[in-house]
Image (cartoon, rainbow, N blue to C red):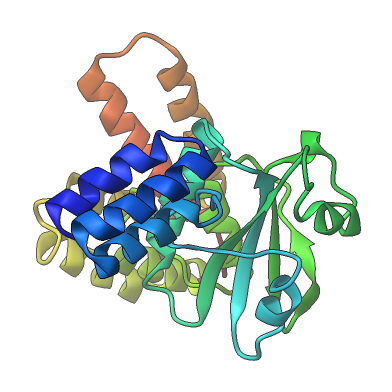
Length: 268
């Protein structure tokens, strides 16, 4: 579209539809039929609800076709049209994390409360009310009717839940290679896994302070048992509730994330 046709489109969008149609007829003579056709198509196209980047937009025509695709897993969010706020921001973060996961897609169903009430039949089918929004369901071969998520709407919590259900979602704020070592360590507490973690921490991840935390927690857990992680989670959480410097808060927050990896046994 030329700069002139773009300007014409901008003007036309400010006009009522009938006047805009007349204006586009004039712009066709002024700009040429091709440019006017493009502008008219954009102007008269129906409004589309915003969809988070990385998420599929589903409706009552496409929902069943998509979630029943063999070999794929879908996380579907049911929410009001034009969702916004902290929970929507967490959802957008999750969408970005999911793009690299094979055979897994995130989708959303925008439900209109007024007007045409688009997709309200899907809301009713899953027995949801607007107070339930956003509601998340996992669909795959094992959960054909949808498995509902019941935790906090936080990207890291949703990711952890997905991993527990067999989806290899990346962790948020942790180191995926070391997360995998932890899962092996949790099965048998073998020293070989501590050695593997140490090698990664001193080599590939030597500049990441979180890497050393993995090794120390594994050593402490080997010495004191699983109760160490439970106690440390409580201790670090309490410290974060108090007055600490921004630097110390960042360090404690990192440690809390790493400790949580040790609570997610067999999720990877």
